[in-house]
Image (cartoon, rainbow, N blue to C red; front, side, top):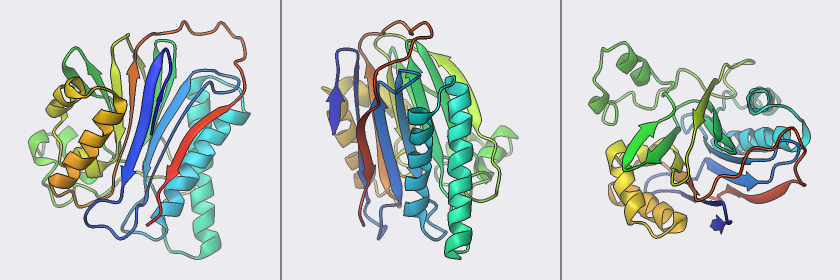
Length: 270
């Protein structure tokens, strides 16, 4: 579950949770990506209200990681290509299977040197933990998220709102989708947590820095987060990928990196 290196310590954990009959979340992480170098981490949460959520989330990760593996380009370009490819693959699978609608969220983070690029659709989240503080790097593409941004609803009401999980944007729902692409600068000592809403819906943002501080490593942190969400009665699958940045390598100046090194892909059985 945990893959430390001299620079990064990364891992992921996904659990079916106490309520669902199937785990429709998928998680992946990889280092030394061909052509661009750097590392890629992602969480996808298949939409439980539709058919084949598990297939949708796995297709999302296969396509995004596949683009990084096979096609050169900047992190921006590859995230946009990967998300477009994932969206179309899911949409076409829906038509082929005659399955009504199927869809998934996706939050993917590419790290190269101190440069962090995030591609995001839906309501899975990416958090940056630094110096005992937490910053959410994504915005929820949900009805409730829109209400918060319009100041119709206060942020502290999001987790308990009846429409918390009603997405306004997701992969596979339409032939085209527009992701949020954002850029951030990370430092040595930072940590990242990418997670599905089955986790953040029952664990407050402000709890994450202390939980990270108390954990001996990424594996311990992920176990604590997932099982704390279960203890608190989450009503969904629970998934997270985490990264601790121990040492930053300078970004390569246009040189191609070594071969694709696929570390882990988790698509859990029901």
